[in-house]
Length: 219
Image (cartoon, rainbow, N blue to C red; front, side, top):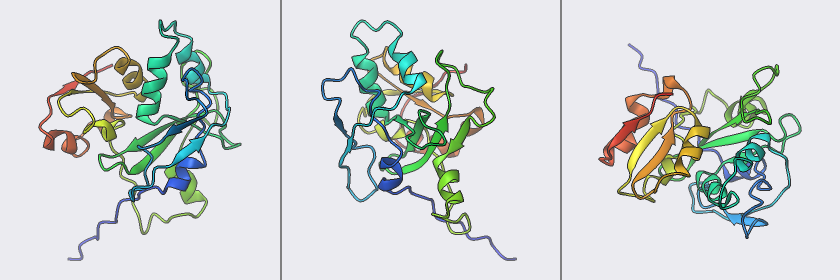
């Protein structure tokens, strides 16, 4: 019998990330003009800095309006740590990008979601969701006959930053970021599956291999 050959995992090059990232919503940070993007490596050690581009992001504006005692600085720090982006493309400008970055700091996928000003998904719009993988494939930048997109837990790249933290897993990336603002990362580190169908042994493998205590939070 002929055995199907497993396709290599698609690792998104840095330029795909840079061209779609805006950092204007990190406006409360003292160093808001540029920030180090260590998590956005191309796997070859190239981290660099990204220039600030002012793009309105309804979700970020809503998050920053929640009455933070520190003016939202802790929230902005975690948005940076998780590598949350804002699309600058004309087709989905201002949409939030949830980057899936693996333990080796390689970008596996980017989920684009359109949000309303109240922080909820804009599911009434005909076009409200896309992925960087799908967009770049439609643009002919890669072929699904040669590569395969394999996503990972949102926040997985932070696993080795806090080696003793319990890993708390939720479904929504938004929930993970907000929840992390209220706990000590030395004790609890939030990650997200992105959907209930992504709660699999394969997605949890790197966390389990690190012998971490895992807590699941159903919504």
